[in-house]
Length: 488
Image 1 (cartoon, rainbow, N blue to C red):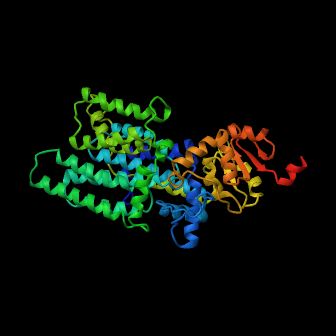
Image 2 (cartoon, rainbow, N blue to C red):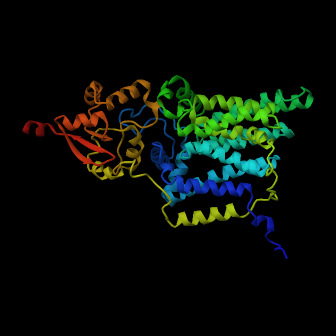
Image 3 (spheres, helix red, strand yellow):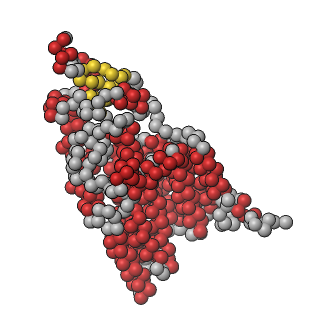
């Protein structure tokens, strides 16, 4: 006799559950240190604590001595507060667990959505695995993970509006208002709605229902643009994002804003997906809908011009790729027939993982082979007024982990410093003449670099500098006091 309180189907894993387990394992095992491979995570924590302590969002830089007091907008203030609350209340293990659960839930939802749309379960699983592989380059504890989630929700809302009409599209302005307080990626949501409006317009005969549905897309687009103003900075948030993406000129210096690096591992799966989208229409019995083609072209362009958009392209391209794969003459295409109900396993795994994390079990952290944590005690012994020149990637680490708190020279907020300052900084790392200018102008007392930097090799030979700490990851120099130089 079947249990009256648990339907048998809820005990049988489905396609979404399989993807949930795969992504959960990928993040917890393969991403054990990878979640922390971004220089911005620590300064998000520092700012979150600062916002909670002051009760207000930052409007000027407070983290560096080179830009102290310069106007600046924290486009991710909501994420910063959430991160600080979680870390200070429960510790990093809970943050890691929630990140893993969130990513697993996202791609599991995508898989279930494809199956509900009539895609074969095996094909849905394959497409989800490809999307995960493309998106994994940005599996980091950063606010853009919320953009992943809201982009998917917006894509689904637009697809349902295209197919069924109604008023569901007006959930997108609410998504935009939330995301505008979490990450600058909120601009993607109106772009998706505008693309959907074009795709819907070209998908069939222009009759009354299509006109009314197109009008709802247009109104939702306008409402989304206005909804983003529901943030502490108002229109200043748009100006900040525009400055970063257009007028600052710094995107050419940021790796994640560069074109997709075909021929390298980071873009290998993206290349497979593109080849599949080119070749499958020749052999597939199904064709890509015009509506899906509109999304595909827009996000393909954005992914090719900036690798940071590749994970969003994978989400947007999933329905079209799944439809083409589902049209192949594969004998096992219909062999897996789940009943479509959600099983209990993802919820059970999530609860179990959170319990383990809440008990303080270490699930990951900074890779000691990459991050110079062993040098922090030596740095903490130096006066906080001593001006430190350092690796850009370590700026956030300095701002969040030094005790007492210390200001950095710079961090990865390139828009705050400007292109000219970043170029000068890069030149200085080589140990050339730029170092002499910067050292005297900014009154540098401490230098903390990777041992293989040209500047590190120069300071080892240059009188007036002493080594305070040295290991395989970093070397910390201190400028000798004037009386020490006289004694020599």
